[in-house]
Image (cartoon, rainbow, N blue to C red; front, side, top):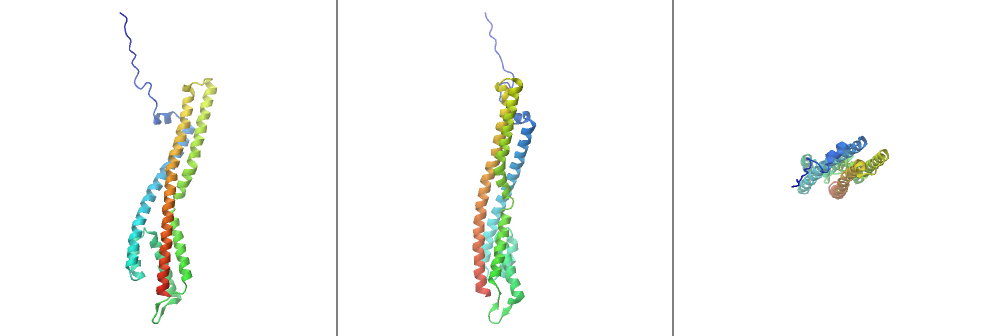
Amino acid sequence: MPSILLTIPAPGAGEAPGLLDTFMLAGPMAKIVLAILAIFSIVSWGIVIAKVLQLRRADDHSERFLEQFHRAKRFSEVSAVASKLHASPMVGVFQTGYAEIDGQIKDGGGVEEDRGYRIRSLTALERALQRAIHQEVAELRRWTPFLATTAAATPFIGLFGTVWGIMVAFQDIGLTGSTSLVVVAPGIAEALINTAAGLAAAIPALIAYNYFAARVRNLKVRLEDFALELLNLSERNFT
């Protein structure tokens, strides 16, 4: 009676290598490229998390500050609570404007009989408010250019790794004289991994940069509206 022989595959035989295995088998250049892309990605995600928290806190403090600002009858009352809401960019604009008003009053406006405190120049106050808006917007935009750099640069860094991997594949073909998939697979794997890593770093950075740019534009509009309101109140009460 003929015997039936069963072939049992060895453990792990026929299993595709994982990403970690492919990375460990990659050449030095592929590892360098992946390390650079990893650094870009980690820093980008750190900026994203920090900016989300910063903008969320800025919105919360701005709402509370506006509530106090509209409720108060004098700028001195607003100044007393402003330091507790320092995360709001409106606080920086208000404090600059309040300091300019106070300085003009002390330097020559003074108190006129039956008219109260006077200021000399609304134009100077407007320039001070505009300068404060630029400073606050610059602070809100801080570190976001790195996201734009990541979105623009990492696909090309990944492309460099891709080209290098293909070069390795052709070099292996030249050395072995064989076009077998076993020969070219390592180089092609390096190329594909670098391509994927470049896109994985670039896409979230691009989305986050556009999101933060839109949020900052909206905040800038709110700051300009607040500055106009502050100018109107100053003209009404100090001129």
